[in-house]
Image 1 (tube, rainbow, N blue to C red):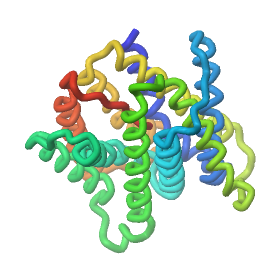
Image 2: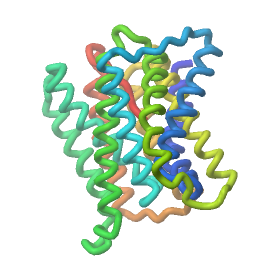
Image 3: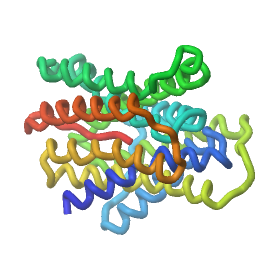
Image 4: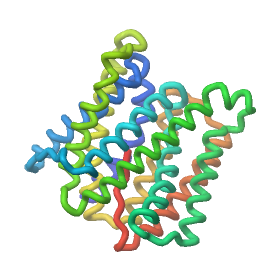
Length: 294
């Protein structure tokens, strides 16, 4: 069941870009962010209840609030970036997050930075550069594409902060209640700007509504499935399988939105995948624990 959970979670993650792009045809980025958290904790709560798990809300721990801040920043910046850019552009979040986590592991948890980790980080950054650049001229790059990439870098840092909080919490709070608490509190935090902004960007349409609900399903269920899978599958296998979400993200963006991709994007994706696989190999040591964020 571990591999099945992992494959389902990976496929769910891969649809995020397309669903955000679809939801943005009707909803503002602030509403999309709220919806991801709101429907996220609802779906996670229902899933936990169906599995017979007890739901507890933790709100006094500082690491819970660090996770709330990180995940909120992750979704806020990611949703804006995808709304103004390509649906597949969020593929650069994972490698940047991986590099950020390597740095945090060195600073907070005193893990060694090996030569392989350095090479892996360079591959990740090179891949991110190519996917962001796409071979454009400077004029084209500064017409919105650069802004999207910068926002996604901030989104990746937010995701990394969330994962760092999970690593600090995992020893005394189970992953289900940890994420339920973070998603619930994040929905309260991200509701604050909604009344002060225009909630709609276009006419009411069913695909946008279903996409917003679907984003909540991904937020709620994928975290739980991934955590359960990591109990039964080696980290190396989990890292390699979950990283294939990058390839599926490109596939769905082309299939459903017909977004343009050139040799720079494809080469960048291949390079960043190599970097992430190298990081997964390094972290396959039993002494290293990690949680993927999406």
